[in-house]
Image (tube, rainbow, N blue to C red; front, side, top):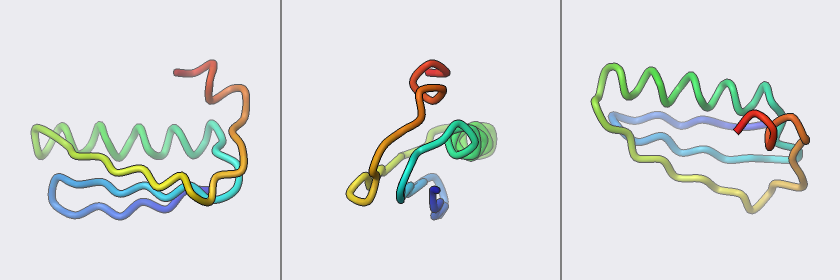
Length: 61
C-alpha cells in the first residue's frame, strides 16, 4: 500500500507493507501527470514501513 502526498511539483510517497505492481502503477501515473503539468517533479520516498515488494514490481521496472 502506498500513500501519495502531491504538492506543486513534489510527490511524497510512503510505502507501507508490501509494494505491489498496482502501487507502482499508481505512483507512475502521479509522476507522469506531474511531469505533464509541472515540467519537473521532485520525488521523496519513505520506505521505513515497507516490508517487501512483489516480484512483478521488480520485473516491471
